[in-house]
Length: 324
Image (cartoon, rainbow, N blue to C red; front, side, top):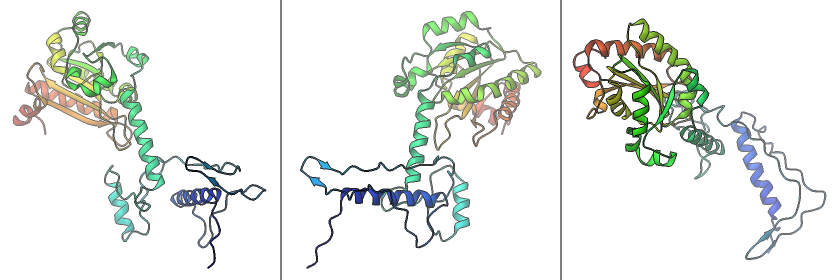
């Protein structure tokens, strides 16, 4: 009976790394030519020493550390991961029709290395957006002061949405002393679930809103920023300001690789008891696959003109036929 040669840990490691490099190379369109195996990793001048295994540790012979150069997984987000699909054009069109992770393929029971790296990259971007802060310099550029909801930390903000819908007594006092009362339109900015949405889009959409409302002959209140903000905050803040319409610019929940999408919520005379049915929203405002911020700003101005003319918003506005 012929005995099989003993496989060292170095051999196993080189085999695994070679397989990973071959997979990454094929995904970038640079797979080795047919019939040609991946180039072997450099070996040390001395033959590898046998592996001495114990129940607690495994000793591996020393040698050159392999260097793996990984490309940016976000650069080819829409590339199909299924080898030899029955309908390549159909698969490409299906992937292009949605932001969902479809057609990504697999390697046995696990995702492809590219798919896993892309998911981890998107998750990291999401964490940065949720736990980030809006730069103070950006708020100062537009003359906005800052107040805070009853939330005290980022973790509490995620666990207690109800506290993000109510202002502290101190915040109400600040708003009451610094804001003009009873304007036609009160613009408010909130971080919401993405500080990146405010950071990346405010300087583009805010001037459009201000110029548009003034051109329409509408009076504006003094703008301000709310940290740890949820949409329902407009009911609480308007008990202090008494605006005809409150316009809230707030960061959306990140997802599917888009972490800087902004939403604009608005409502006619919001106050206690008002619900989502009384509000309107323009969402997915971003230059990364959504509505351009300046275009969205123009749309919001036109929409608010209809709200004020009808003295209604949300379902009531649509019931009157004031918007579609």
